[in-house]
Length: 461
Ligand code: OOG
Ligand code: NI
Image (cartoon, rainbow, N blue to C red; front, side):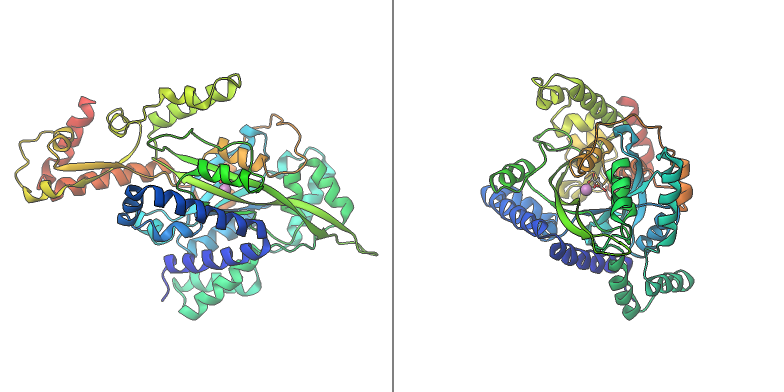
């Protein structure tokens, strides 16, 4: 029987193949990133070795994430069921009204380190807030268009039911599920509405047209991993790949934090409209390609500092560079750990293990680290950032007016639509850190004192 990780791998591979054919410029981006990654690795053998050792070198070529947008509660909940089969759970809640966008979102993703290593694919999934459409007639029209469509194929629906009933499917059924699931995300350039309706919805908001005028939630971008995202940004400009103006997220650092992203702007593509009499054609601009580079996951304290500095940078005059504002965020792994700004994974060292059982005299984690019985490295951030996500959205929507203040979204409403609660990302990093520490202390023969040692350590901080 195929594991959820194997199903996700198969699905991500199939989706990637489909999108490379649908969006030729995305294929150019994948080639460009591969070339730039190769150059960086040649110039920095140390980095190459590090990636090799952590097993990340081989997975550099696979997509890290993609994004889709749905229009109705039933659509969001059926996606939750599909992604559950692929070992992906909804993590995080992102209210994009803060950036003037009428959607709220989550990311379906693997939640364990092992699963992420087996295949890191996640799907940033947004739900349209139909309630924000002020014009009542227009809102009713959008609701009825969405009520008429079904975003999964009949075979996919049948296999989902079967899986939920039996708890597993045969390999053959899994393979069929994957090829049916991919159909949900295929772009069909035949709009389901007339040109007049398309124009009306676009005028209300380009996102509404993208979400409601087609047969389903087409994949709107896929994202590959860069080792040096600034080098990729420069190469995109040099090759005329029309990158967005700037890289989203924190500035470049020696010790990366959170997530940095860039993309090429969405490409207009020909579509046809659903007209009763003669054929009508137009262009639709929504689909693009993205690059990401991930760094350390931040604690609540670290994240608060990041958010404060980002606000300051966004409000600051142009002359004040992001780098200057972010000088206030320590760019030193030890400082980040000691000040509890980032989450860390602890490991016993060889020296520590050789003397296992003899560390009782070390009274704290700090002492164990000092004695080189323990090592600590930052845990990678596996989630998204609302301000950055909004920046990605904005640079890919055609004809977007200035950000308008919108009523804040409700997580409760989102979770009701989803059919379950979203997982708090911080709880995953906290657990990963605590588990790694407990396992390390255990391996050093300190298991009983573990909780105490940690407590003392926290107290000393
Ligand atoms: C999603 C944009 C957000 C990211 O990487 O932050 C996103 C969308 O355009 O639907 O994918
Ligand atoms: Ni993205």
